[in-house]
Image (tube, rainbow, N blue to C red):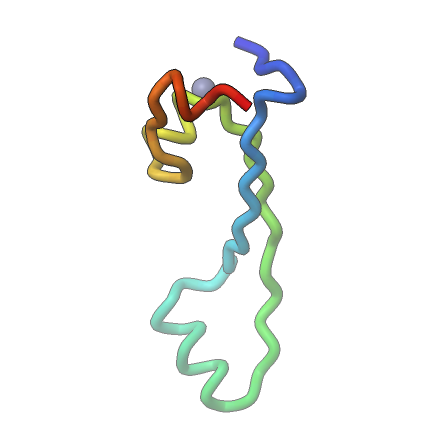
Length: 63
Ligand SMILES: [Zn+2]
């Protein structure tokens, strides 16, 4: 389902293409590891599910 523009919770996370243990070793040797930016547009229920935002009461949601 499409989320209305003003209801979207935008989450940006950086994902490494190299596995963590290898990336740590490479960084220790001074290598530059490329990271990919992953942007997610979550609806309110998904944002709550993934722990991005917390559930608020109807009173709190009113602006
Ligand atoms: Zn959703």
